[in-house]
Length: 194
Image (cartoon, rainbow, N blue to C red; front, side):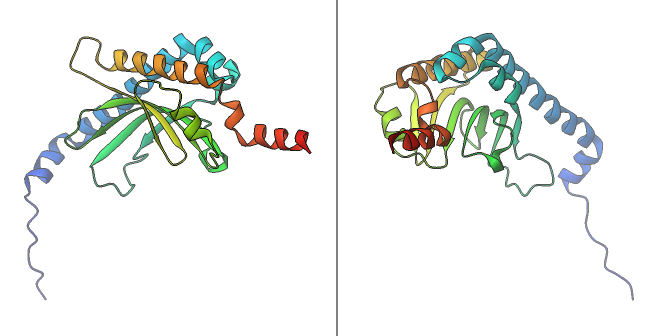
């Protein structure tokens, strides 16, 4: 039995055969550089971030881990959007809350930097944070974030990171820290009230 010949001469395959390794390296290098830019900005502002959020400085620094979505190249992904940055705590599957600092880009949209927090059981956290009137704040069920677009200007990504961190610090200063919204704090408060 003779098998029919498959056409494998698509432009993507031809170009991929010549440049796949270079494209893969470029993506990996881009991730590293974005994560380093975010880490450098956080390190420069860690005292302000830790004080505003009422979290331990060393805990944040040691707990921040690289983050990307898609996380790996074998993951099912439609190519419509991507994220790369840092997250805390590093083990999401065990956490009841988390913080992310990342670059996001979507198909046909301007990329931006987000400082983002999520809560498994937010209670009144989202409405309280939304009421503080911080510019650039977005909310959804169990989520709050600051969005700063990455423009074409001279400060590009680093400027957007700086502006996002400024607003993030302002949010948590006004809120009185994140501890009041965390499960362990709520449990201690409920036990003390009994």
